[in-house]
Amino acid sequence: MQKTVRYYISNGGSKTVKVHSIDGRIAQVEAGKWLQTMFIDYIEKPFEEYDINYDFYIKKAKKEIEALEPKTNQLQLF
Image 1: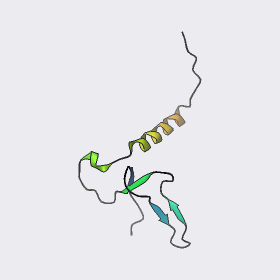
Image 2: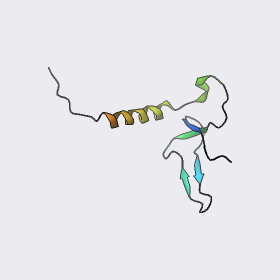
Image 3: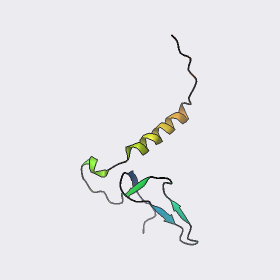
Image 4: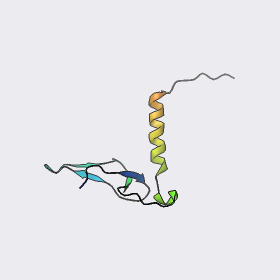
């Protein structure tokens, strides 16, 4: 079994968990409501058929942008 698991957040799919081989601890790959689709082997198909959850990636991108550009209180001119 390979150690690298490739996946993407999708609208369909399932929860992915990792189980520690020695003590049996269980950890979710992405905590919360997000479902994952395994992407171990590439299968060529139309992009729309991957059923990507764009909301997840948009929220992640906004979070990264806000970390670089913190919100400031902008004065408005009338």
